Length: 213
Image 1 (spheres, rainbow, N blue to C red):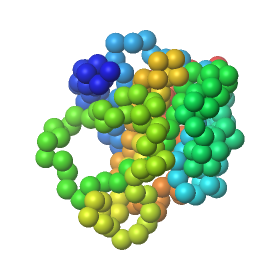
Image 2 (spheres, rainbow, N blue to C red):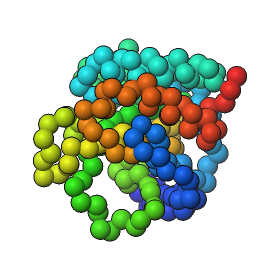
Image 3 (cartoon, rainbow, N blue to C red):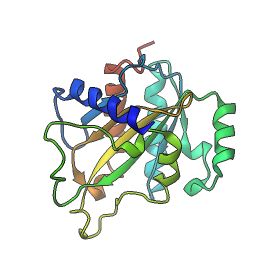
């Protein structure tokens, strides 16, 4: 799976490398799994990971509202999942199967390193290989969250975050679409939820994962 994902990522980011970049609350980079038909989102579980429950609720509600404009059903994670993902993997798999979800969206913030990775080629973007399949990713999404607090910078980050969006297919558990924003102050992660929702839905529309009714 990792080899397939790396090869797919290679073709994917080469194809998308020329896309325009935006900063802050806009989608700065995006990637799609190549070699497969573009999945049409019908029913998607929306999960925003973060400590602020009100911000999570507002984002997931806004996503449900916006997706409905394109004939897609958004299921809020706060109504589907227990707090802090206190559900065993087997139970969650069964609940997803019974719900007829075709995709899952996971949104969270990632710390921006003080120094860029010298091995990363400029102008090339692809999601981490660990994101290639839903369950390995999900099992660490809550237990090992990226830094999102507004505290002073530490040795790993400089007080900035990027908001990432990951869309997984429930059929084969593959990551099919990934995007991230430009760097913002970590304290702004909760404040910009509705703007992220609008930017994300607009991009999913452009990439034909959702379509106007």
